[in-house]
Length: 274
Image 1: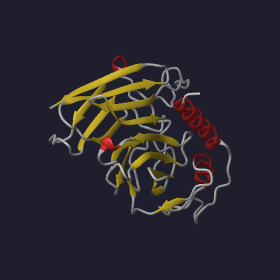
Image 2: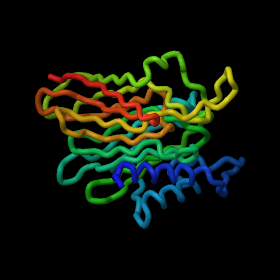
Image 3: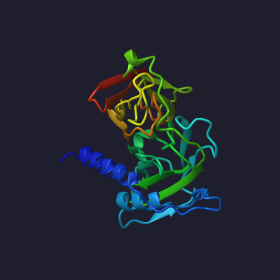
Image 4: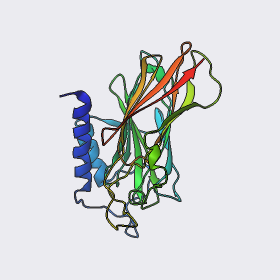
């Protein structure tokens, strides 16, 4: 079986696992622990499946996740991943995992990186369904696993109805560069896909029936024919999913994003550089 399909099946299995009942260890007042670096019953199960027998190194020495303690809108919580390690061939960030412990589908994104990103910093917006830890795990090329987490107070992120006024634009994929382009140096860029990213938990306000899930499953970004990163996504990423990332141009070329959604829709966006 193809490796991407194996990973996809594993993520689907973890989503089912996360929905299963679990004992919740409550802090005073009945809410789960609000300590940023605390674990959770969900995280114990998820990490055990994702990284069986592996040691996760906690702290912000290698990777940091930045998210608000209180988010006004649970369907669009800004999250930033900051890597403290440059992407060099001898040691680099090979993979990033974004997890929202309490979400119905907790594995929001798995990003497979190359040294072509230059600097493994990413920004996006996530759905957070209830008070939960948001976590990043950074897997290095030497096999080390580093993790950081933030506790976010918000709710309703997976059931908030999406904006359905631009359904005719579904799949439109846009790339833009943030700032000046300097060759052979990391350049920040954004990829945005117009898509409702329906979770399956939203009610149609007219029919009062649940809207079937339909969301962006993968975004593959390349520059001048060289892979920059592949992202496997789930509906825990907000509607109109956007990723801010870096890439290193080694001369003129085309920045390209290839997108696939859960209905096998295929979309492409390109941007000429140089």
